[in-house]
Amino acid sequence: MKTILITGGAGFIGSHLCELFLKKGERVICLDNFLTGSIENISHLRKYEQFTFIHHDICNYISIDEKVDAILHFASPASPADYQRLPIQTLKVGSIGTHNALGLAKSKKAAFVLASTSEVYGDPLVHPQPESYWGNVNPVGPRGVYDEAKRFAEAMALAYHRYHGLDVKIARIFNTFGPRMRKDDGRAIPNFINQALEGKPLTVFGSGKQTRSVCYIDDMVLGISALLESDLNEPINLGNSCEMTVLELAQMIIELTNSKSTIDFQDLPVDDPRVRQPDTRKAEKLLAWKPQVRIRDGILKSINYFKTLKTAEPLFHI
Image (spheres, rainbow, N blue to C red):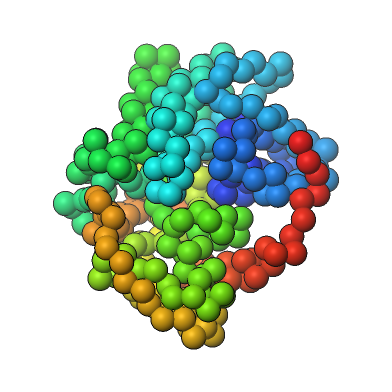
């Protein structure tokens, strides 16, 4: 049995990773301060004897009195709504939090997986985006707090690899969706689904012709697990290369919810990426990984999840 520590383990992707490794028979230590995570995301994991939750901010020093085989650093606000509301916390967890997590990995001789993001590419001038592309990022714009925090985290992780020999992996995660996203997450898919379910107009920014490539959560966590098990020590794109416009996504959700909602076009936010599509050839070749869940099927599962939120109750409390 391996011991996997996941920072941000009560968040959207983090909680699915906790569940995946528990089902594999591993011991999981979930660390979260609930800045954007939720106790409801991990309530069902209490049934596993090998599950431990620690209420802690990774920006503060932490010591773990047992062996740790791998650390997955997934603590950070991740949606524009969150990191623009929490700019300093976002910068701190990307810098100080990453430093603390790397230090713990070094002391435990543990593998380290950094949750990076497609946002390191900014508003890309290269399409689709390969790992070799350095990006087009505005460091002082409203999205810069997240983009630069992740770019710095990548640089620090690879410095630990080069200087200390730490086994570091970097997952550049493209738009991911599915159950356990918050209703107020602020990203397109939860916004669209909840607006459609409530019969409200769907808010589309700009013309809606900007593109996104969205990946269902079950596929994403399998990609992250494959990366952890690999011998790669370089950034790897993880995402679904199926590209569609934001307007097409909104129209699909209206159709699948049988909603009478209309589209409400609003001004495009500053530095909003015009295109987003991962070049996933390296992941397909080196990890033997490729998304399997059709977008429509993933959207339907997400719709069913959001329909249940009103009746969901936490199973335990801090």
